[in-house]
Length: 614
Image 1 (tube, rainbow, N blue to C red):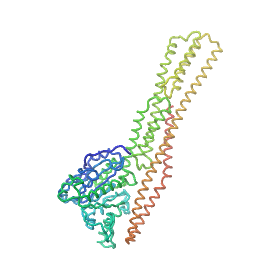
Image 2: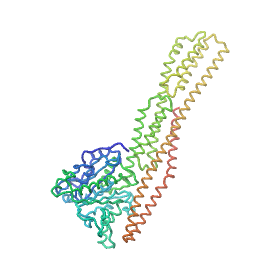
Image 3: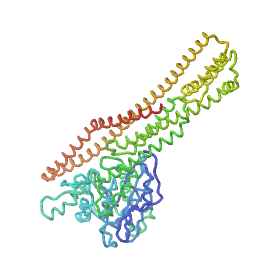
Image 4: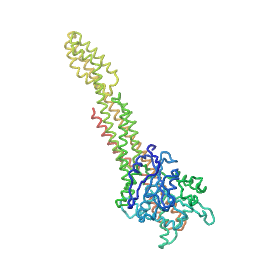
C-alpha cells in the first residue's frame, strides 16, 4: 500500500478535553486521517504533567517545535494531539504521533478523564511511551495506577462471560516503553553494570506473599508484565541547566548535554525501527482512515456511557471498510472500462482481454482494503456487481455492433438499393446482374472494419429481407429457363444456410469467450482469496506466536522467582493460546469448500444471464 499520505506542518487536536471535562473527537483531525490510505505506526506518549513528554514527540518528528513544550508548571497539552508525517524508516507507512495531556494535572481538579485518556492512548497506539522523572521505584509504579484500571475501561468481547479478559490484553496492547527523565542513579546491581531494560525488569519483580500490602505492591507490576507483550526502558540524564530548560524548544543539540543527546538518539532509533504497524485483534494492519474511524467509535462508546469494546469495534470497522472496498473496486472498474474500451470492439476477445485486466486490478483493490470478510460476503457481492457491469458492457457491445453494422450496410449496399428502387434489375438478364452486384457488396461488407462482434448476424438479417426482392427479380427475368430458376433457388437456399451457419458460429465464439471469462473470473477471485486468507492466517499466527512467547517468558520468570502457583495458573492461558493457534492453522480447507460452492452458484447465474442476450 503506497498511496495516500499527508504531511502535517504542525500537530492538531485529535481528542479534545474541554473545560467541562467532556471528551470529543474533532472532525478536522478525522478528515486528515481519512486521507491516509497507508498503514500507520502509532506512537503515543503518556505520563504525569510537566515531565517533558512533548519534547520526546518533537524528537520523533525530527522537529524542535511542534507539540507545545511550555516553560512553567502549567500543562500545555489538553486532550490528545496528533501529528502525522511520512515514516522516516518505513517506506509507504505514515508515522502518527499522539501527545496526551499530563496525567494528574492539578489545574483540572477533576481528573476523571485521566484514565480515559490513558485507555485511549493504549487502544490507539502500537507503541505506548510512559514518561516519568527520577527513578522507577514503588512510588513511580503506584503513580502508574492507571494501568491497573484498564480492565474496567476496556472490553475485549461483546458478550459478557466469567473469563478474565485481561489475559487477552497482550494480544492487542501496544509495546510499552518507559522513559525516565533526569535519571541520576548508576545502572548497577550487586556491584555489576546492568542495562536500562534490566533495571525495569528488577523494578517489576514481584513480592512473595498474599497480604493486602503485598497485593497492592504487586498489582501494577502484574499488569505491566501481563498486559504488554514487549517492554523497553530508556534513561536520560538531565538535558541542560534549569535556566536553559525554560526555553528547550529554542535549543539545538549543541546546547544540550552530550550524554542526553546520545540517549535521545538511541530512543529515536529504537522507536522508529522497532515499533510495528498498528494492528487490530487478528493481526489486521490499520490505515490512517481506519484509525480515525476507530477513534470515533471509542469516543462514541465513552460518551454514551459504555466501555469501548474491541470485538464490536473490529466488526463495525470491517463493515465500513469492506463496504467501501466494494464501492472503490466497482468505481475503479467502471472508470477504467470506460477509459480503455471503445464500442464496438472488433472481437469478443478484445473486450474480454480489457475486462480481465481491469477486473483483476479491481479485485486486488478490494483485497488490499478488506479484512475480516466473514464467509466472503463482500467479495461475493463484488463479484455480483462486476458480473452485472460486465453483462451490461457485453450487451452494450452487441447493441453498438448492430448499430455500426446497420450503418455500414446502409453505406455499402446503397447502390444496390438505388438500383432496386429504379427497377434496373427488372429486365432480361437482370437477375444475374443483381446476383453479381449482391455478391460484390457482400464481399466489400465483410472486408469493412468497425462492424464489431455482430457482423454476420447483421448481414444475415439484411439478406433475409432481400430474399423476396431476389425472388421478384428472378420471376421478372424472362431469360432464365425453369432449370436455371431451380438452380438459382437452390443456390440462394444454400447461401442462406451458410449465412445462418456463419452467424451461429459468430455467436458461439462470443458465448464461448464469455464463459471462459467467467471461469477466469472464478479462478482469479479464488486465487486472490486464497492469497488473502493465507496472508491473514500468517498475520494471526504471528500474533499468536508473539503472545505465546511473551506468556512463556513471563511463566519462566515467575518460576525462576519462586512464584510456582502463578506460573501454574498461567499454563491455562498458554494452553488456550496454543489451541487458538492450532485452530487458526486448520480452518482454511472447510472454509474454502463453502466459498467455492457460493462462488460457483454465482457463475452459473452469470452465464445464464449472458445467454439471455441472444
